[in-house]
Image (cartoon, rainbow over all chains, first blue to last red):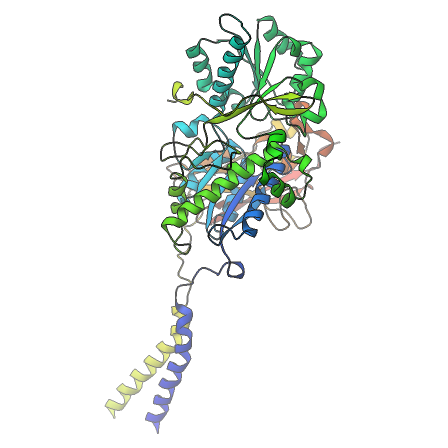
Amino acid sequence: MEKKKFLLLLVASVLVALPMLPGCAPEEEAPPLEEEKYITYLSLADYTGAIAGLNVPADEGLKAYFDYLNDKGGVNGVKIKFIGVDTRYDAARAVSAYRRYRGEHKLMMINAIGTHLDKAIAPLVEEDGLCVFTPADGYYVAHPGRGFLWYMTYQDMFGAALDWMLDDWHAKGNPGMPTVGYYHWDNPYGHEALRGGKEYAEKIGVNLLPPEFNPPGTVDHSIPLTRLADSGANYIYIGGIDPNPTIVLKSAYDLGLTEKIQFVTDVYGPSETVGGRLYPEAIEGCVVVRAGVDGDEARSHPLAKEIAKYAGIPLSDLDWVHIMAAASWGMTTEIALRKALETVSYEDLTSNDFYKALQNITGAEREGLMGPIAYTDTERRQSWDVKFYQFHDGKSVPITDWRRCPDTVSLYDWE
Amino acid sequence: MHCFSYKKALVAAISIALLLLPIVGCAPEEAAPPAAGSIHVTPSSLELAFPLMLVIPINFNGTGWQPGEAIAIELVLPPGVQMKGVEPGENAPVAFAYADEEGNFNTSMETTTKILTIFRGDLDLTRPGNVVPESINPIPPGTYTIEAIAVLSGSSNETTITFTAPEE
């Protein structure tokens, strides 16, 4: 009888324990939403801060592109989930956002809307084996790592602008070399183009005047602009994010300088929907260096209609930044994902596969919206090509075809 | 008789082991995060005076962290305190640091973070000084918890800071 009781206890124990054994197997990753295959793209963005005017339309264009792509079935059935976090351009918020989202399902790509945000998370990105899109600092080209530029560097753009000025100067029958002024924000971005750009000016023999800087938010630029004009500037290269360059041009216009001096701005110069609507008369004739297509040229592209439709905005409000984001961040992510899926299944896909793929899509085209992709295992420029536009009646009109930027980064001593 | 007692004990032991298996065997596999280091804030109390506070350094330092560890420093917002870019229930980030080789860190709150977070203000690069004065809306005076959280391991520690109403 006793024996039977113990045997009964043993059997009962086995029966209780057995069904629970499968529950002890290592936990598998939760299945993706509705069994969809997807990767995650995290935007450490600025929707309500200092550069929201640039980032809101940019992420609007990017998200529209991902929605469009996902509706077409994604990349071989793999969709791209977009997560946008408003860091307000604050590095502390970027680090905390990274902490919260680093565990997202198949997180492959992060966009840092400012170089300082990227530098804050860079060691974490390295540790986690992820990749980051980062603006245009030469540092990332000089020290290739997991930071991939949105286009070329600021110094390369400046070099391309100097090349264009030289051509324009000679095309107008002028002898010798032009004198060039430089007027930018007094912050790391404002100084960056000179790290290699200054050396390039010397190399090609352009007379580059001592640079002038202004704190962001300056309203009256008449004193430094007058100083540059009095020093004999034939061209002035200006920086800052629109509407700031438009405000600089307004000061120049009020002084009558836009009649005498050719102004050229960097990639963030006047746009049709900001400067073009604010002071069209002040930006008339201004030349802008763009890393992608602009104006009617951009809006007439078949993809533009889709982006406007998915973003829920009229085509007339579609700006260069919508298109740039769709091409530079969206299409590049799509192309790298496609490349990665050629070598590994979705199930086995890791961020390291994506990192390798990003370096192996050299020469890929993005329907003519930007130059071909330039990334390699040692190259972090996304593209070498810029296009020059000029404002007429508030409209941005192309004045060149794609022009290759010079390599100015290699001229700077980074040590 | 002896033989039966031995068997009885063995069966009882196996039964108990089997009953415990689901509990012990299913314990989370993750190792506990390493113990967090310390966090101190200096000063521990200050006035919510704008723009005076912008020039007063708010320093955070700590010891005992893992070498090279990234640490997010966040302000715990009481229920009902709203802030742009911060979802309800989330903390408001105020700084970050990387521990040095000895596991120490020393960092401070950026001026823009003070404007955006302590004063809940807006920035505008077209305005002189870049601050939108009419947007300044300090967080309510009181004692707030500051959390220091290791980004990769999740270990954390905390301290407090008191913000007092500015003197009239």
